[in-house]
Image (cartoon, rainbow, N blue to C red; front, top):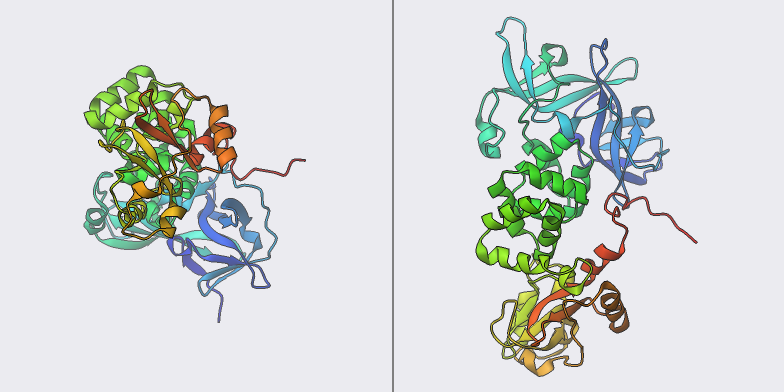
Length: 427
């Protein structure tokens, strides 16, 4: 089979990268190009490849031996240093898709179009270059739904020499096509991909995400990024996204904003959504009250084990929250009636489904007070091998629960989200 000499970049996304022995090195996440002032065709200088550990590294095109049959073959020599984009480099998927350009074809009136894909081609010199641009005539509004954006205008494949403005950032650039290439990523990995974008592109991608997805991503981003994104959103949209976040993460984000901005957002939220956040913000950040979530799994003592197992199966629950059921007197929303005890998921799996959760309670665990400092919280979790601990007021009413992921967020270095792949062994 002859090697492929032209390939569309959107089809490269996610392709497996192999070394000469057939061992998988990683997957293609983007293509890096350079726009020279005198060069007729932008040169492809390399690939961004995601290797095991979710690290994104740069593979020069000089080390790509072939792009063939749905795979990329390299020399196998990969520098594992994390990819950092230079000012002279452009990422095709992250920055060029959905960009507005001007097309001037022979014997046609010039027209505006939106980039949907680009083709790269292998020249006789063995250099890869951008040769063609696949675009859609017309410029749909950046806020339009993806299905409406696709219906507007005829699609055309034009030579790169007929396109102007490809290397120039445009205002209001959409992000639907880019998000399609990120569709399979988990929130933490999508957050990392968004973190690597320019501030302008980061804001465009954030605005294109739905509220639930953006909420998940904000929970995984470094502080500076999420503050930048939320302050760049319309106030009502920002309030909706905060409502979709986990209460403890939303409260952490609000505490990072200027006080007047945080108060404005709280006022725009639904009162029953804002109330738990106001309670969380009243506690010290390094205390059990400041770390807890106000939405643990809560059940009445007469509920059955079958009902409890159905409740913890919910997809939206994190593993740490799903591991423990907190049994309380009604009302069953924080702050609840008196906390009676907890039931671990392992105990639920060992008992008959028709039994009541109140009959299998662990009553020996001493709950935390909201003022308990981080040190006491961590010691308690370590001593009793817990993934979640209850937090109660002076009357024994459940206020929330501190989970192990909340604790890790506070004991890891502040920049751990930015340096998550830079950990080295220290002895």
